[in-house]
Length: 369
Image 1 (tube, rainbow, N blue to C red):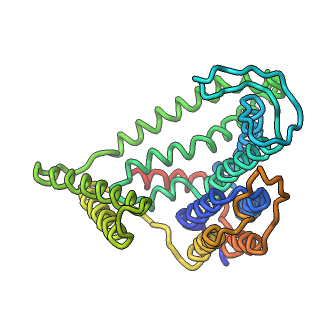
Image 2: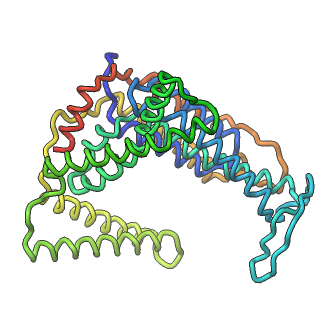
Image 3: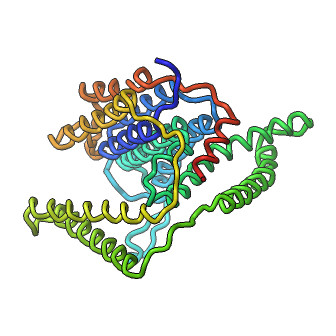
C-alpha cells in the first residue's frame, strides 16, 4: 500500500467509537485495553508533522485526570463503603450543605470508585487525542458540510491549539538551550510562558488577516421569505428532534411513533443544512478520497463499539464494576476481541507520507479560500 493521507473522517470516526465504548464501562482492564489500542495505532501511523506530536500531551493529561480524581476523593470524602483504609483529619459541615465533609475516613470502595471514574475520563481524553495526532485538522475541514464550514473553522483552530503550542514550546526551548539558558525545572518551564503566548497572539493576528483577505464569512444575500423559511425549518427540526429524543427516553409514547418524530426532525435538519449551504460561497480543491482503507478503519471503530453495546445490553457483569463488591476485575474474551479489532487500523491504514511544510501551507490556503 503506497503512502498517502487517510481521510480524517475515518480517524475521527474510529476515535469517537472508542470514546463511546469507554463511556460504557468502568472495568479498568477494558479501559486499559482501549488506551493500549490507541497507543499502538498512533505508534504505527503517527505522521511526522506538528499535530503528530500532541499525543504525549494527552497521555500526560490522562494521568493527571486520574490523579486529580483520586485526590479529590481523598479531600472530599463521600463516605462510600465500609472498608476503612486509613483516617485523615476531617471537618464536617452543616446539614444544609448536603453533608459535605473534608477529610475523614478513607474507604477502599470510595477510592476504587474514584479510580474507575478517573480512568474512564482519561481513556476518553486519550482516544480523542489519538485522532488529534493522526488526522490533519486542515484536511478535516475540507470534509465539513458547507453550511457548517464556519463552525468547522472554529473547531479546527481549537484542535490545532495544542499541537501548535507544543511545537512553539519545543522550538523556544531549543533556542534557549543554544543561548545557554536554563530549560529544566520549574524556573525553565515558567520562562516559556511569555514567548509562547506572544507567538500565539502573533499567529492569531496573521490568521485573522489571511482569512479576511480571502473573503472568509461572506455569503450570498437571501430574501426575507427565504430567511423566514430557514428559521422555521431550524425551529421545526430542533423541536421534533427534542420531542422524539425525549419520547424515546421515557415510556409516555409508543417507540415507533417516537422514532418517526425523531426521523422527521433529522430529515428537516438535513434540509436546513442543504438550504444554508446554498448561500455559502466555497470551493474545494483536490478533495480527499474515501476508499477501502477508510472503510476498514471506520469498521474497526464501529465493530469495537458494537461489541461493547452488546455486552452492556446483555447485562454482562464485567462491563460495569460496583466498587462496593470489592471484586477483582475480570477480563472477558469479548474484550480481547474488541481490543484486537481496535488495533487493526495499525495494519489496514496506509502509512502517512513525509510531511512537507510548503505543501501543507498550500493546503491551508486552499481550505480557507
